[in-house]
Length: 266
Image 1 (cartoon, helix red, strand yellow):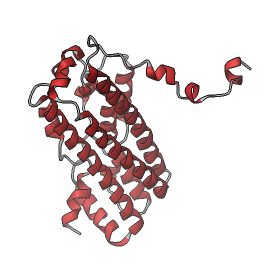
Image 2 (cartoon, rainbow, N blue to C red):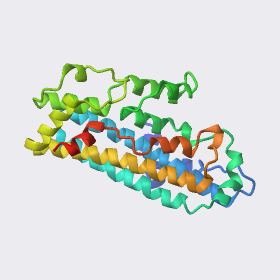
Image 3 (cartoon, helix red, strand yellow):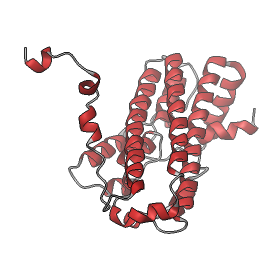
Image 4 (tube, one colour):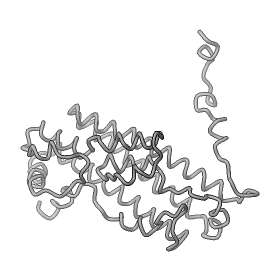
């Protein structure tokens, strides 16, 4: 047995604190005071994105195993993480536009638009784009992860398969749909969901957790775009990204449109 294996874990060694604290490396001279905050906030977001992917994968696995109660529990955890992520924007908004501009030019082509983990979350939720994949170099970790998510079923696909196993007559065309295609509203699925809400409290509750997730993602998008507008206005984002103009287009776009359409039908 090696010395490393025999050594008792400490708080610092288990969490790799020395490595973690070495990862904040401002590029500005001085450095500019607010660049450290900017780096830490975005590194924390990437950690939350990693955890969201971990939990979303778990929620899908539990649905596939017909463990809807445990899947709901996981969805509740995801919703709590989303609320924390939204709250963290309050911290970022303590940085004024001038404070951001003091180091913005040193970001070069770096942009949140390049977060492959957030794109993976979008892919898992059904918002897929081949163009997004092409932004990442061949052979990179990011591209490989995105290509895998692009070809994989979404959370909505797992949910429809679950409903089918719960003896709902989900059309085969939906169970075998092209997982690359966006999730479009369907009158057939809406009739099934209305039936769920009227006579199946267990699965109606699961539907509500998916609505919560959809709303949570929309809240994140809204707060994110307002933070960008507050910080850089109508300027293009770093690295030539579209900035607030692109983000604004994503606000209010539902992930699970059928769960919203049936609100007026119940």
